[in-house]
Image 1: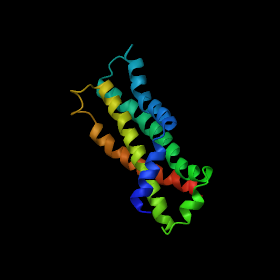
Image 2: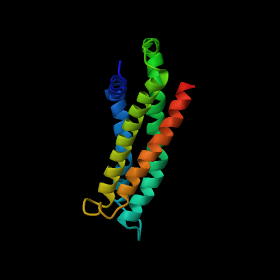
Image 3: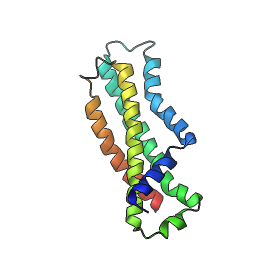
Image 4: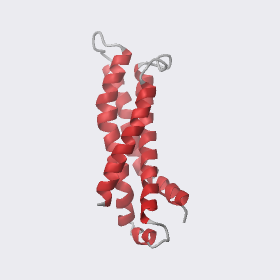
Length: 160
């Protein structure tokens, strides 16, 4: 059993249809909020400023945290619930490598979905032409750092 097998198997478990529906709602939430507010936009607020406000409020403080909880705690809990943890731990693979591959899969999914939420929000607020001047590249990097930190925290909580 290789590390890549554990990583791919964990990703496959995280991509189940029921989980994807919940993730899809979280991804579209910031963009939907922007579209609702754009019906009657606030006075004097430009698209970039609006993007920054919603990005901080919804993507960083809500979507990233919820996705990290959802994916980080789910990988270990799922092994216990499906009673496959015994099979997994009896393989000649060190436990830290199993946990590291599961962590890598959760960070991958959390980062990808948070990036998708950010990109959808940027497209809705500043449009395609405004992407170059927006804070999107900076935000994508920070979302990766946040996914690494929150993923480690919630995987530790699930393991304990």
